[in-house]
Structures are given as structure tokens and as C-alpha cells.
Image (cartoon, rainbow over all chains, first blue to last red; front, side, top):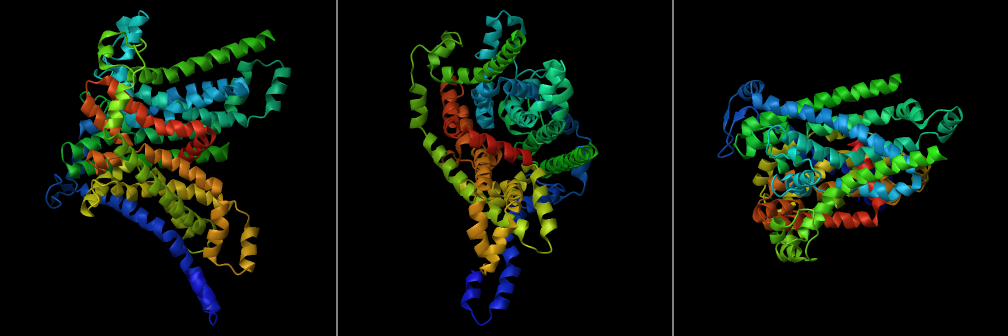
Length: 308
Length: 275
């Protein structure tokens, strides 16, 4: 607009052009900055402010109680149990997803072109919404009508049948299994790209030197993937710390909080117990935990990368 | 030769094993959704349905399914269009315009990527109620665009930085200002970056659950992921009908995937890697 008016106003082209140049950053960045202010930065700050209130969500704002909610959080065993579950999820995501993904990437890489169809099919779980996936697996795990127990019975392992989601010992593990099932193909594609950049001459030379495929994998290919593995681990950890959807749909954090995560705990505090103040304290704490861990791991990975 | 064949055999078996692990739940889903409720109690779970009957699908489609679908199409298409426009504008400024706050602003926007959306949930819920957009599909658009901006701006800024400076210099000789340059040079040349951003965000938002769940309540205002949630409550004991909804809700993306797997895989990888 300004640009056009600059052209039309022939008498003062230079100052109009200057004006257009000075205004340009504001015009181009304005919408993005405005939206981020309203829907990201304001809510973030508002969350910290709400964390200082005792408020059931009705009426006006509730009352200011200082750091009482934060004090409560420090002594809230349920919150720490949820945080522990987040950490378990992170640890098992890394330990289960990455190795299986590496193996699958090696398989697809080794099979070459014929594996294209396999890759396409492997990727399918990633397209499903967590609600669809959650409802599917809730039925899959159902102790009475679910196919998993029927399958175990069918192959003579009936003794292993469980109430997968209803038993405090198994619920978290059962959901972690589904999370892994869905996300493994993501890391597989990541590692496949890593392997594609592995120089073919290197493995040819190694074969001539009499190295077995196993040796080539452990000594050459795996070290080649080091950076990609680190990226994968970082993504898995950050994703696990803010996980919500599938747990909420499948177990709601239960039974008896056995699969509760920080995000589901926050949700329950706000929308089930109507403690908007305390729920916001949980949310803010979650923000601090995620930011600190993300910052530490980003720093660690970038330092490692500059060292190596 | 024997070793080579042996190796291929091992690889192929591993590949087929994971194929079974991946497809088993989908197989169950398809089989079950074609059964009658009666069959689920009588016959074995893994048995084929007695007849190829679509009665569950009919029932679901006769219900509100298309309302959910329509809401999803509406919300996702408006959001993605806004994301593409707003983030490419911002990316152009960050990639090419010289102004004092360029560096800090880029860092701030990119830092938005690590904010867990759940932290913003309660304030956005309160805000949406206050401005009267609670329980409308339109209330979702603001948060959807905002949560997608950091990653989209990041991808497009990286992309636009690669566009050769010479093109811009040529335009400057023609006396083009920043606005003409953006619309005539940067936008058309950013096609691949824009399609990555559009695909990634379309899939993420199509499947988005938590905001849709919290910011809407009536079925005729809700998006597709909530169809599964709502029907699940309604059909509680009717497993085949519930699973028919699950299948139907997955179908649009699976069809899109069948048409353009390469683009979808690439878009999803690029988006999450930088996220």
C-alpha cells in the first residue's frame, strides 16, 4: 500500500520510500507478533499470575494467596508421582524407540528399493489422531472383549492375560507401548535419512578388508548416526515431558493415578476439581521443568557437536 | 552368495515382523468395524465377520459425522491459510529486512517452540469465554494459528535465507519496495517451504485434541477428533460402531496419504524435527 502511494506521490518519492522501508518490518511482523502476544506470551504470564490465586473458576478471580499454591506443590506427592511418570516415559521412549528405529532403518536401508512399500505402511500410525488411536487401543487392551488377551489365549499363553489398563502395575507400561508403536516409524525415517548419507565407498572398502556386516554396523554406521541419534533422543525427551493426549484418552491418568502425567494432573486440577489456581501452578511448574530440561539438553547437544 | 541371501532373509523377516506389528491393530479395527454387535459376543475376536456388512458405518454416517467433518475442514483450512500468510510475511522480514530488533525477535519467536501448549490452556480457555468465542469452531482458529507460528516462521525464515540475493538486487534496480519484492519474488519462490509448512500444520491441527476438547462443548461445534470422543461415550457397549467411527475419522488422512506419501512424510519430518 505504502509502496504504491510512494509511486503515485511523485513529488516526494524519496521520503515516502524511506517511510515504506521503516514501516515494512512492523507491517510484516505485526500479525505474527500480535497473535503470539495474545495466545502464547499473555497466557504464559497469566498462568503464573493465576498460580498465586485460590479460585474455583466461578465469580471474579478468587483471592490472592501468595505462594501458598507453590508451597503446596512442593509437598504434593501426586504431582511428584506424575513428574516421575513423565521421566519414566522419557527414559523408556528413548530406550525402546531409538534402538528399534535404528534396527528398522538398517532393515529398510539393507533391503534397498524393494522396501518402499514397507516404509509407507510403517508410517501409518503417525497419521492417526491420538483420540482415534486411544479408543482403538482401549478396545485392543480390553480384558474381556479385547483381541490382545484373546491372542495370548490362542497361542497358549493365557496365563499372561491381564487387565492391561485397569491394573496399576500395567497401565503406564501399556500406554507407553502404544506411544512407542506410534512413534517408532518417525525415528526410523529420521535414521534412514542418516544412513542415506553414509558413504557407500566406506562399506565397500570395509567389505574388501573382510569386515562382516555386523562389524560395519557397529564400527562405522552407528558412529555415523551419532548426531542423528542425539537429535532423536532430544525430541523423545522433550515430547515425553509434555505428553498428554494418549494417556488422557486411554487411562485418564488412572487407575489411582498410576499413569498420571504432569499435563493430565494439571487438567484434572482445573477441569475436574475446579482448582484453577492450583492447576495453573502445576502448569507453570511444568513449563519451568520443560524449559530447563530443554535448555540443558540443547546446550549439551550443541556442545557435544562442537567438540566432535 | 549364500551369505548375501542369508542377510537378505534376516532383513526381510525383520521387516515383515514389524509390518505385522504395525498392521495388526489396523486389521483388528477393520474386522471389528464390519461386525454386528451380536458377533462380538459370540464368535472369536479374530474371526472374519459373518458377512461384509456396513451397518455400523451407515449408522455413524446417518448421525452427526458430517458436521464434525465440516467443522474440521473449516477450522483447519482457515487456520492453515492464515498460518501460511502470516508466517511467510514474518519470515520475509526476519530473513531479509534490516532493523534493530531482527535478531532478538527471531530468537523469541523460535523459543516459542518449546512452550508446552498445556501451559496456555487455562488462560486461553478464560480468554475465549470472555470474548464470546467459547463453543464455536472459530474460537479454535486463534490458538491454532498461534501455536503453529513459531515452527512455521522458523522453517520459512531458513528457507527464504537461501533465496539468492541477486534476484532481490535486480528487483531493487527496478525500484521495487519491500512489499512488491515479497509478493513478486519471495512468496512465489518459497513454494516448497510453504508446502512443507502447510502439510505439517494441516496434519497436526486435523488431529488436534486438547484445545478442541476444552474450547468447545456441543457436538455440532466440534471437530473430527472429538467425534471419536463423543461417540465413544454414546456407544459405550457397541464396540463395532465405536470402531467404525475411528475408521471413518482416520480415512481422510489415509486417503491424502495414499495420494501423496512422499510429501506427507517429508512435511511431517521437517515440521517435527525443527519443533
